[in-house]
Structure formats: structure tokens, C-alpha cells
Image (tube, rainbow, N blue to C red):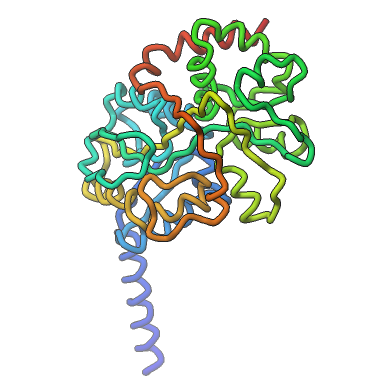
Length: 334
């Protein structure tokens, strides 16, 4: 008798629990694959947000930032995204022109970016300077400037990312345009014999470099910190270039079509919280956009400090991206 009552009560509790779980709202967040992947900060961000939102956070991934923008363009107002994490400053104007994003309404005072930030649509969540990473046990004298890398006929072999699909790939294209301007096509032609390949995304390029397929890879000044912290390896370095380094700022935004706008807005507030920001240095291996209460990992203190920040505005990128990509295609396809 009592056993049956207990069983009935347990069944009721289980049913209630399932019903509760089923009624939790779901926040769908689009991002790029490495952010939500095994080694990215996505798992930590999901756990920490779900701990305070009484909801479920569901990641939906595209391969890279360029692919993410392409997916949003294709889906238009039918997109299932409530929020997006992983666009960057170079794609901000194009993303805004899709007319899919709502004002974030978040106070962005106290950001620790190397440039001023004011935007009502996108929130920066991390940043870093682009840099070529090399193995110092194999390359004793890396180039000290972009021009030295490009113009030395016997310089190191490099692996790059496709600027049409990859955020660092587009960043390097803009870096070349900043330094060479109208001479960028000749610079690409000079560099082309030592480009091993253009990969679709960052992960594939970095993997090829680690396998020894190239002497240097396009990455970030903070990338060596991963090897020091996780692998206890000190030979990976970022090459400091005299002309300065191109800045990469990653962004989050909420959509106009969010099923639960209040939940999406809560997530946007969460992006600049310590719970999110503290997951960036050792999750995404980038600098947090708002300095975490916790100190940065020791290895970050050895990151090179560029002498000059190179950057196009989002509108400049939008106006010129097609022409820059066409110039790159023409120069590298010959």
C-alpha cells in the first residue's frame, strides 16, 4: 500500500519535473564552430548562463564568421537565431545592413578595448591583434615586418585563411590593404609562391602549421599563451611587425525576431558580465572586452604589444570588401 503511494508520488514528481524542463524557454544562439566546440568557451558560457536564466541555451554553429554572416543573409527574417555570438568588427556594417538585429540596450561603459567603442547594435565580447605564429625551434629569425615577410623571395612559407569565409583571413586581407594600398595586388603576387594554402577557417590552418606544413600561420598575438598554459611548450611565438598589427574585435547581437526578447536581452547583459568575460582568455584565447575581476593568465603578459593599431572602420570594410577580395583573387589565381 505505502509502496504504491510512494511510487505514485514519485511518478507525479517525475512528471512534474519533466513538465518543468519542457516548459523552460530555449535561447537559440548562432556562433562559429570553434566557439561552441570541444576546446572553445561555449560549454562554460552555456552552463553559466543557464545557472541564472532558468532557460536552456542552444548553440547553432557555422564554420566561421563569414559562414555565419552568409547563413544569416540566407535565412533573413526567418532565422531561428535569438542572438548571435561571433561576428566581428570587419563584418559589422554588412551584418547591420541585413536589418535583422535589434538595439542591445546594454551599458557598454568600462570596456577595455584598445579603441573607443560606441554602437547600439553590437557588443564587443573579446579582441586580439592578428599575428603570424611560428615555432622558434625551427625558425630562428622570423621577419620583423609585413614588408619583410612579403618581399623576401626566400622568406618563410605560410598558411593563410580564405578572406571570403574566415575572420582572420579577412583581417589579413585588410592588413595587406592597410600597408600596401593600391600596391596590394603586387604584394599578393610577391607572397603567393610561399603561401602553402588558403583554408576555409582558422582551425584547419593552425592544424596544418602544427603538422609542419608551413613555417608560420595567420593567428593572434595571444595564441602562444595556449601552448604555454595548456601544453607547457614555450617555442611557439608571435612575430612582432614594425608597421603595427591589425585589430580583431568579436561581437554579439540580438535579433529583432527573437522569440523571447527579454531572455535575449538578458543574454546580451550576460555577455559583459564577469561570468562570460572570464571564460574568454582560456576559452577563446583572446583578450576579454571588459577586464575580468580575475587576473589574466600569466602567459598573456608575454603577448607582444603592437606599436600601432591598424584598423578600417566597418563602413570602410563594407564599401571596399568586394574590391579587396577581387584584387586578392586576381593576384593569387595567376
